[in-house]
Length: 235
Image 1 (cartoon, rainbow, N blue to C red):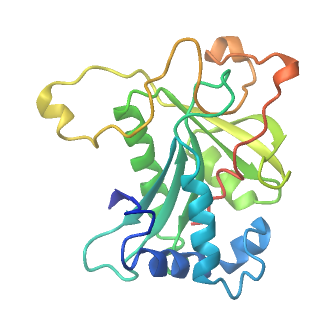
Image 2 (image 1 turned 45 degrees about the horizontal axis):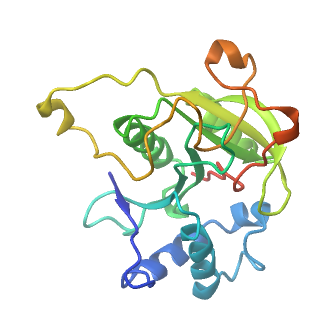
């Protein structure tokens, strides 16, 4: 399995990418009935998917990753990941997983866990020591998936997109250590976004026991909202 950045060319998606992503979303109709991202989850259209991707890329630190199992896999697109490397709240120094979704034909086969592991490895290789996401209230499947992977609930907030109630989760990625050139070649290259600054300035979510976990507490006057309905995972 690999993560392949989706990079628009002259403002347009690469050939075939839109069709594959549309099919991916269409295979998750039950999930999208929960999210409300599409007017009719049973009839998702390419132009609706394209509009969502345009909004995603409008965020300066956003990255969209295609999840591919291998060259001859069916379906060819196994999943989709949306990342936000820098949160608009200057008091939040963490990247966020905005979306991780696996093709409906592949649910229950471990693809979600493998994709999440690759995302975490990618962030570690980029020098990030933690990651956050949010799960919509009512999405118990996603909540169980993320907590099983070591994420813990640290807050409850509304997302910025539609004001939907969410649980905010955080995971420490561990100490970032320097590797030999040979070891560095064995891990994914770092992604875009600036390195973490000690003064803060990345993505969002607050923690229980913030001092002990190293998370900063924000002033109550700057209670940031979740950047997206993040962590809308479906596997």
